[in-house]
Image (cartoon, rainbow, N blue to C red; front, side, top):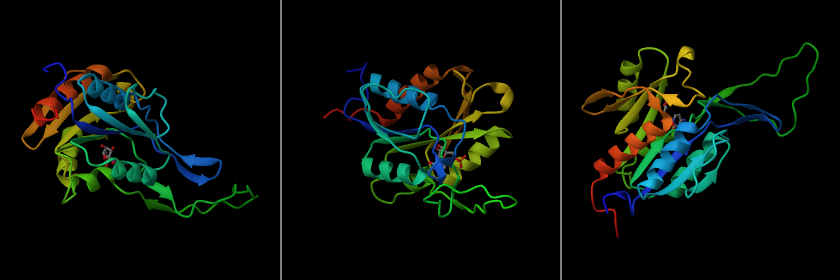
Length: 224
Ligand code: C5P
C-alpha cells in the first residue's frame, strides 16, 4: 500500500560514533550524537521497511522496532554491516573514527613522570566505500553522509565519486551551525546528476524526506 512503500525491503542504517580503545579505560571518540541516524531508521520503519540498526555508543535512543546491533569500534561496525547483508539499501550515518590505535594496550597504560605514551594510529576500514564497491550483492542504493566544514558541496561531490556511493547527504557541521548535537540539520543531497539543497529543518524532517526519496528510488516490488 502507498503508506508503506518500503514493506518487504531491508535497509541497514549505521549510526553514532565509534569508540576506538587506547587501553581498557581510555578511547578515541567524536561528538556524534546518533540523532540523525536514529531519526532515519525511525522514518524507514514508518514506511514499512525492515531495518537493521548498527550503532556505536550513541546518546540518542535507538529506534523502536529495528533490529539493533550495538557495536563499539569501526572494525566491529564493518563486521556487523557485512553480516546484515543482503539489503536493498544501506545508509551510513555513523561518524566512524578514521583511525584506531595500533596494538591497543590490554592493560591500563601507567602514567610515568617525563614519559609520554607512544600511540601510533592506523586507518580504519571505510565501511561505506567497501559496501559501495561490492561487485556482487551490493545494495541497490548506498547512501553516505559528508560532514564538512569548508567547501561543503565541492568536497561532498568529490567524496561521492571517490567512495562510489549513489547519494551523499552533505552537511555543514561548522561550529556556528549548532548541527552536531543539535535537533536541526541543513543538508544538500548529492547524486550522480547534481546537487539539491534542502532547507534547514529538523533531523526528523530530513529523515522523512530521505526515506521518501529512498522509497521512490527503490520503486515498487519490495512486497513479497
Ligand atoms: O570520509 P568521511 O568520513 O567524511 O565519509 C563519511 C561517510 O563515510 C559517512 O557516510 C560515514 O558513515 C562513512 N564512513 C564509513 N566508514 C569509515 C569512514 C566513514 O562508513 N571508516
